[in-house]
Length: 195
Image (cartoon, rainbow, N blue to C red; front, top):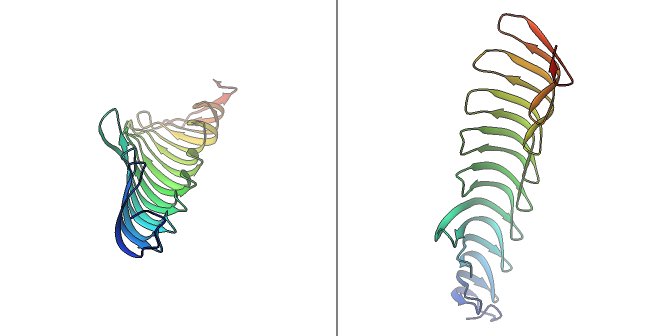
């Protein structure tokens, strides 16, 4: 069967590219539930609409160099892209659960990083924007993030000393604000220097 046939029912379609589809077909188009094995060996199992991944599904990413599936997404698809709610396991063992838009983490979500860190908050176009970042060493940051760094207004808590800082950050460092120590003393930061 070819995709252009007016077949309806359950079928198997082998494409000239080397990809193959097995599942429900309506008027020659993949419609309902089906499994697609792509030419690059990626696999999608889930819902289709008018020949496009649309609805709930699972997509496994194949790594040719490692000769195995190294990443996996389970969740919502809209017109062939990850959109809505979904869970992604990355090749480096990072794991994200949350909102997606146009194949990118956008909205509220949580990510467990392979180094032991964890972030929960707002994402935009695969970038952390604002939220709570728990470091593997027990320190906690709550605030704005830019380009993967603590940047903007936020609070930082040091687990080892019990002290915390509130103010502005740039490139992950305190710039302007107040540090409160466990012994109830205060340190002021101005232009990145503790006074």
